Length: 209
Image 1 (cartoon, rainbow, N blue to C red):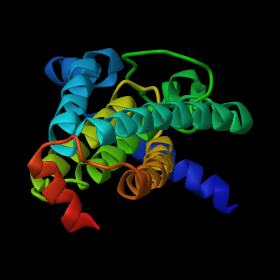
Image 2: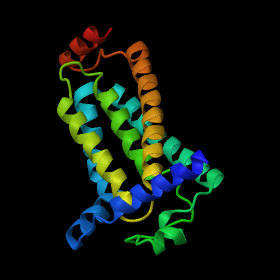
Image 3: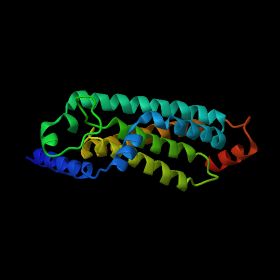
């Protein structure tokens, strides 16, 4: 069957990626895999949003990013409970074929909440920053999407997800992040005035409308 063949390919890709480990890289992937270490980065991004797009729009942006995290988390949990695909670290076939385990977690892993949240944050924050037309934010895009990719792939290295879990999580998170970001952008451009904001923000708005 096609599904069985896809599962086999996913297992082999996961084992190949997971096998690329060393004492140094193990610590790097564990670092990327721990969500708590990224809280300061989130705070900096939010602070930059307040600086670049004005406090009114930044409040909407903050609420949007929080909603994005909730949506990504809950969607991932619904799929995990519905699909019930065992994580690699809980699958005897993967263990017997040399899976290198750095972490163990919940029973089910499809799809990756880490991938959904990181790519959702990358897509959502980039679109929100683009409300400020004074900069193109290409550097930010390169950095934030690279970060999202590293966070996501770290979950394969620590044995918590298959590569397919990562791909599906990244796609789901990107869709959720883009949908919410464009909705927030519409709200900001339609209903949020900039009369009390700096002159530079008013000029940016005039170019957007």
